[in-house]
Amino acid sequence: MLDVKGLSVTLGGQQIVHPLDFTIRAGDWMMLIGPNGAGKSTLLNALAQGLSYKGSVNFDGQDVRRMKARERARRLALLSQRHGVGYAFTAEEVIRLGRYAQTGFLRGESGEDERRVQEAARLCGLENILHQSVLTLSGGELQRVFLAQVFAQDPRLLLLDEPANHLDLPFQHQIFELIEAWLRTPGRAVISVVHDLSLARRYGRTALLMDRGRVAAQGEAGTVLGREALRVVYGMDVHAWMQELLRGWEDK
Amino acid sequence: MSLKSRREGFSLRDYLLFSLATLATALLCACAGSVPVAPGEALRAMASALFGTAQAGDPTQTIIMGLRLPRVLASGLVGASLSLCGAAMQGLLRNPLADGSTLGVASGASLGAVMAIAFGITIPGLPQLGVMGMAMLAAFASLALILALAWRMDASLATNTIILVGVIFSMFANAVISLAVAFSGPRLRTVTFWTMGSLSSSGYQDALTLLVALAACGAVLLLSGRELNAFAVGEDNARSVGVNVRGVKLRVMVAVSVLIGVCVSIGGTIGFVGLVTPHMARLIVGPNHRRLLPAVVFSGAIFLMLTDLAARTILSPVELPLGVVTSLIGAVLFVVIFMRTRRVR
Image (cartoon, rainbow over all chains, first blue to last red; front, side, top):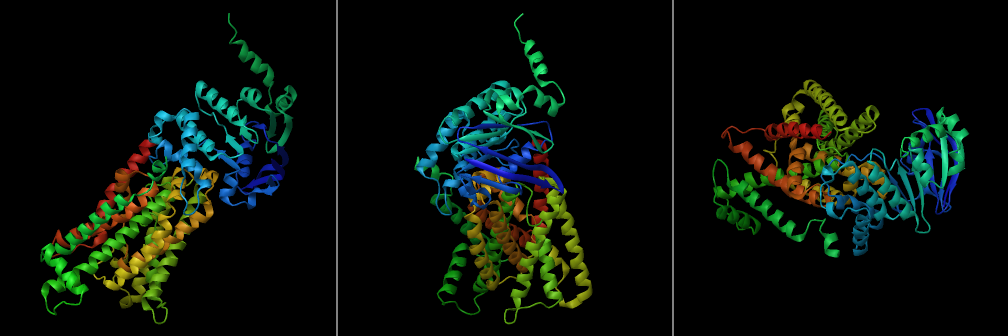
């Protein structure tokens, strides 16, 4: 589905991402992991065409860089972690923006678009706050509004930047379950930046471990999240630490 | 369902209501003044001018058609244009404080106009177009420069950074204007015209120019409502949902620059109009640009016609420059909005 070759990003004269390759197949959920400053978000933004990069990103053999904006949006969407909405739009209006790629210069939303908006809102449990201003929503609700927006957009590849960052546990769980359910429809794939390695292990099918802009390991999630690779990149025995944390939860 | 999706836009009923209010305001402004004219009389004078049955020397005719109507038309059109520009930039930059005057675009346009006059830049046969063209070019160049500078300082384009750069640029442009005036002497009209606008001397020619510019650029902006919504939610989000971010930015910037350039070359800098009306219109129709932009065109016209009426009647027979009155109102509102945006954060 997605074929990345020799992709590198330089920002302000500094190389943030060194040339890397990977392939995403339909049904994949690839976890981008690594410590702070590894270049994960930069890589994701480059894939979403928000940053200029060297190398090639092909979607089903087509160069993403050359696609028209609407064409691209029907294939891939980015859910970023910062939502600084400045005005009192309603949740519904924000979700409806997801249908932009289906509209034209003079062609507005159709009944089908409206159906998709309502369906996405229902899926994310937002029916009751659809007409509320997004400025009054909690972080968890706002994140679900933007998740509903990408669901309404109906892309084939979802790029997620820390989808559950700063969210309470129930929301975190809910969002990952929603994404996993979304992925069950054939022909779809997900790439997500995740800090929580337990979540990466639980939901990731493949993983790309980054270290200071370079690939430290890539492949099956179980292998990439192996003891040695993580020890080298994170500078600590992650496995031992995770197990120690877990022991705190054992019923006494 | 299809009814629901249409709800986001401005309905025919809304258009009728707002046009009615605008026409009523225009009539009020034509009637009120140092010599009050009854609405019926005013309408009669307009009708007889339209059908060519006007009698020379009729005082009502002279007051309405010769003095007040061109000024009312010009103030309405300038108000609509500046407000539309303000609303568009506030959406594009996700910044409720953006306006031709706070961003320094208006000062830039004034500088362009002053330079055209000082150096005698004209297009043969169309003397006014040289000034206007320079004002437009300078407006676009200032907007591009201000955004580039602000972006270099703070890539997230925070509210305060853009405004700070805009204000500093404004001061710089005004200083250069004063300098140009000092050196070129009688060739330029007084410097206050370019720093504090007025529409007291505008005629039908000006109104027509404004109407053409507003029709052309207004169409571009009104058709970008959906894109501006996306920008108002966030530029990254706009890109993700499929907005051609660069194309739309350029389109909006060009339309805004042309409109501000025309307004400034006709009326000088009439500050804060694009700040006040979008803010008030948002309270009535909400932040969605598909409703906000049309609403702002009408309410901007109403606002500036009324402000101009106040400017010429409050201290009658002394007439206040229009830009002074709008700045008095606008500066207070600026503080209010600024405080509110800080509280949100």
